[in-house]
Length: 126
Image 1: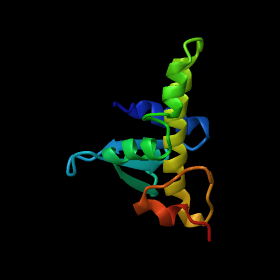
Image 2 (image 1 turned 45 degrees about the vertical axis):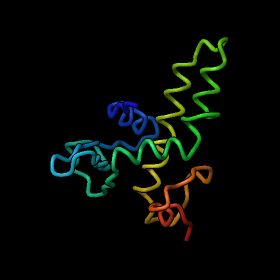
Image 3 (image 1 turned 120 degrees about the vertical axis):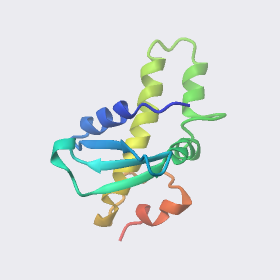
Protein backbone atom coordinates (compact mmCIF):
# COMPACT_ATOMS: atom_id res chain seq x y z
CA UNK A 1 0.00 0.00 0.00
CA UNK A 2 1.23 3.48 -0.82
CA UNK A 3 0.71 6.49 1.42
CA UNK A 4 0.80 9.88 -0.27
CA UNK A 5 2.77 12.29 1.92
CA UNK A 6 1.37 15.32 0.10
CA UNK A 7 -2.16 14.16 0.97
CA UNK A 8 -1.20 13.83 4.64
CA UNK A 9 0.06 17.42 4.58
CA UNK A 10 -3.11 18.54 2.78
CA UNK A 11 -5.38 16.85 5.34
CA UNK A 12 -3.43 18.56 8.13
CA UNK A 13 -4.07 21.89 6.41
CA UNK A 14 -7.80 21.07 6.41
CA UNK A 15 -7.70 21.08 10.22
CA UNK A 16 -5.66 24.32 10.24
CA UNK A 17 -2.59 22.56 11.61
CA UNK A 18 0.08 22.63 8.93
CA UNK A 19 2.88 20.08 9.09
CA UNK A 20 5.89 19.31 6.99
CA UNK A 21 6.81 15.68 6.43
CA UNK A 22 10.43 14.63 5.95
CA UNK A 23 11.93 11.28 5.12
CA UNK A 24 15.05 10.33 7.04
CA UNK A 25 18.09 9.36 4.99
CA UNK A 26 19.81 8.05 8.11
CA UNK A 27 17.02 5.64 9.04
CA UNK A 28 15.23 4.18 6.00
CA UNK A 29 11.46 4.01 6.45
CA UNK A 30 11.33 6.75 9.09
CA UNK A 31 9.03 9.72 8.54
CA UNK A 32 9.44 12.94 10.49
CA UNK A 33 6.33 15.06 11.01
CA UNK A 34 7.22 18.61 11.98
CA UNK A 35 4.66 21.21 13.05
CA UNK A 36 4.42 24.16 10.68
CA UNK A 37 5.39 24.86 7.12
CA UNK A 38 9.02 24.36 6.03
CA UNK A 39 9.92 28.04 6.37
CA UNK A 40 8.53 28.11 9.94
CA UNK A 41 11.02 25.48 11.14
CA UNK A 42 8.73 24.20 13.91
CA UNK A 43 10.21 22.55 16.97
CA UNK A 44 7.48 19.95 17.60
CA UNK A 45 8.33 16.69 15.84
CA UNK A 46 7.01 13.16 15.73
CA UNK A 47 8.90 10.26 14.20
CA UNK A 48 6.94 7.34 12.77
CA UNK A 49 8.14 4.28 10.95
CA UNK A 50 6.30 3.80 7.65
CA UNK A 51 5.34 0.25 8.70
CA UNK A 52 3.52 1.77 11.69
CA UNK A 53 1.19 3.65 9.33
CA UNK A 54 -0.06 0.36 7.92
CA UNK A 55 -0.45 -1.13 11.40
CA UNK A 56 -2.43 1.92 12.53
CA UNK A 57 -4.83 1.50 9.60
CA UNK A 58 -5.29 -2.23 10.31
CA UNK A 59 -5.72 -1.74 14.06
CA UNK A 60 -8.40 0.89 13.51
CA UNK A 61 -10.24 -1.28 10.97
CA UNK A 62 -9.69 1.12 8.07
CA UNK A 63 -8.09 -1.58 5.89
CA UNK A 64 -8.32 -5.37 5.98
CA UNK A 65 -11.18 -7.87 6.01
CA UNK A 66 -14.46 -6.33 7.17
CA UNK A 67 -12.87 -2.88 7.23
CA UNK A 68 -14.22 0.53 6.29
CA UNK A 69 -12.46 0.39 2.93
CA UNK A 70 -13.78 -3.12 2.22
CA UNK A 71 -17.37 -2.00 2.96
CA UNK A 72 -16.97 1.01 0.64
CA UNK A 73 -15.56 -1.18 -2.14
CA UNK A 74 -18.34 -3.74 -1.71
CA UNK A 75 -21.00 -1.06 -2.22
CA UNK A 76 -21.12 -1.09 -6.03
CA UNK A 77 -23.63 1.78 -6.09
CA UNK A 78 -21.36 4.27 -4.32
CA UNK A 79 -20.22 6.87 -6.85
CA UNK A 80 -17.93 8.57 -4.31
CA UNK A 81 -16.07 5.44 -3.25
CA UNK A 82 -12.61 6.73 -4.14
CA UNK A 83 -13.12 9.96 -2.17
CA UNK A 84 -14.55 8.08 0.83
CA UNK A 85 -11.60 5.69 0.86
CA UNK A 86 -9.11 8.55 0.70
CA UNK A 87 -10.87 10.39 3.52
CA UNK A 88 -11.07 7.28 5.70
CA UNK A 89 -7.35 6.62 5.37
CA UNK A 90 -5.96 10.13 5.61
CA UNK A 91 -8.31 11.50 8.26
CA UNK A 92 -7.43 8.59 10.54
CA UNK A 93 -3.69 9.04 9.98
CA UNK A 94 -3.89 12.80 10.54
CA UNK A 95 -5.96 12.38 13.72
CA UNK A 96 -3.47 9.80 14.99
CA UNK A 97 -0.39 11.89 14.23
CA UNK A 98 -2.07 15.04 15.59
CA UNK A 99 -2.59 13.19 18.87
CA UNK A 100 1.08 12.20 19.01
CA UNK A 101 2.15 15.77 18.27
CA UNK A 102 -0.07 17.20 21.01
CA UNK A 103 -0.02 14.47 23.65
CA UNK A 104 1.91 16.68 26.08
CA UNK A 105 -1.31 18.62 26.60
CA UNK A 106 -2.78 15.61 28.38
CA UNK A 107 -5.89 15.48 26.23
CA UNK A 108 -7.17 12.77 23.90
CA UNK A 109 -8.60 14.47 20.83
CA UNK A 110 -10.29 11.43 19.27
CA UNK A 111 -11.26 8.74 21.75
CA UNK A 112 -12.30 6.36 18.94
CA UNK A 113 -8.74 5.81 17.78
CA UNK A 114 -6.96 2.66 18.93
CA UNK A 115 -3.25 3.36 19.46
CA UNK A 116 -0.35 1.03 18.82
CA UNK A 117 0.94 -0.37 22.10
CA UNK A 118 4.05 1.82 21.93
CA UNK A 119 1.81 4.92 21.74
CA UNK A 120 -0.56 4.06 24.61
CA UNK A 121 0.85 6.81 26.82
CA UNK A 122 0.19 9.39 24.09
CA UNK A 123 -3.49 8.41 24.06
CA UNK A 124 -4.01 8.72 27.83
CA UNK A 125 -5.70 11.75 29.37
CA UNK A 126 -4.07 13.37 32.34
